[in-house]
Amino acid sequence: MRQYIRRRPYHDLLNWLRHGLQHIVIALLSVGIAFSLPAAAQYVLFEWWPKTQTDSHSLLATEIGLSVILVLLFNALQTVWHSRHMVAAARSASLVYATDARTGLSRKKAKLLAQESSSPRDVFILTITGLDTFVDPDSLFHDVLDTAYEIRVMLLDPRSETASRHVEAIPDQSVNLQSMRDEIAASISYLTALHKAGKRVTLKFYEHEPLWKVVVVGDRVWVQHCHHGFEVKQQPEYVFALQTIAPRQGFFVPFYTYFLDHWNERGHPVYDFETRELVYQEVGENETKRVPLHFVDESDDLFEAPAAPQNVALETSDL
Image 1 (spheres, rainbow, N blue to C red):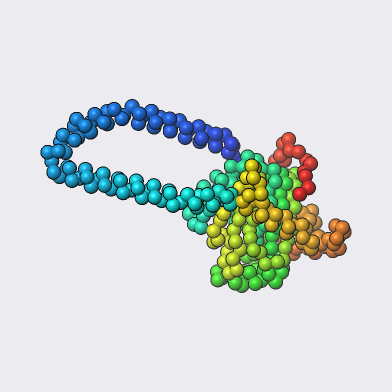
Image 2: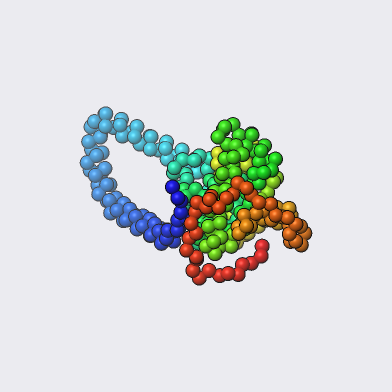
């Protein structure tokens, strides 16, 4: 079945409506509680308590219920008190989200977090194949790339020895060099469609052993550790945000710099979307050679180019 790049829904309007409904619900609950307090107090004092005084079973049940409520309340307060240091540490590290479980609820929350950035202009990605990162329509950044203008992606070169060691260390027998090449071919096809749509897309390949998967979207960065012998999607995921008041605080800038350092390293070939070749350059950006990727064929174009973005500034700042 042919896959298509989907347009991003109106997340800004939905977020505005969601926050508005939350404020309305809280206001209604507050008004309801305020008006029900006199009636509740009158019921407890003049109806419930007189019956409880003469009924030992009701008195015992009331005491047990009150004890349970007090225990739960004090335990909750104790948990909050002891967690204040963890909250302060997370705030200092600029950690806004973390999960080690791939449940439906956690993925939904993570996807909403990825889509909160209103039409990010730049998206930078350093990963292994890119399939689970942005090609899959259910991935976190599928819609995000559809709205961004400048996209920089770094993928692991499937021809390298590092790629062979990576797939050999994974116990899953379905993961091999061929499956890696198929995933990378799908990623190239997806990025080619974005390139044809007029977006500024640059794809590079690296050969070193990956340490971190990094995705920079606006003022947030998604991070996963590339543990040897495990697939990246099985690793815990952390999201750090840029603190505008104190930008040097937290882990956003270090991971952002981590991506830029690898991006600016010499020796990484750049993929030519027109000729389907890897272009090698030396110091001074002089082209030295071109190498075709034989596993990428014109028949692999599974994605159609979306409509060209309207009113998008064509100039971009150098990072």
